Image (cartoon, rainbow, N blue to C red; front, side):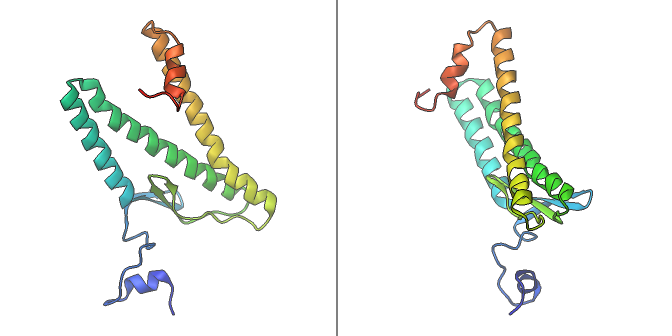
Length: 166
């Protein structure tokens, strides 16, 4: 038996679903790392933009048309920062990777770190810590925007309540 990449490259063989070169678009080389965007992210983005545009057209509110694309941009930047946090931490610990594949739910290629529980824990926690920072920046931006519009800050609490329907 051969590896998955050799299976995908041989003529007449089936392509394996986990073969990232087939199922993703190259975003170029960022230093020593090949950055790729998985097709599921592209499909998710296309569906989100379409639904956002369609909802805005039916509601007559043009601002809703921008909500989908802006949310996608925040998602892409969040996933990118999350994965690079894992990568940078792994490099500092003596590990690394040769590619990062961005999917709508996160990265799809594991990062290599030295086999030590502490190193693995630090590399694993780096991504979620960056997500927490992104969430705090978004919250601060939302609060500043609401204050500039003269809206009460309780409206932000209503948005953050998962049990309250819009």
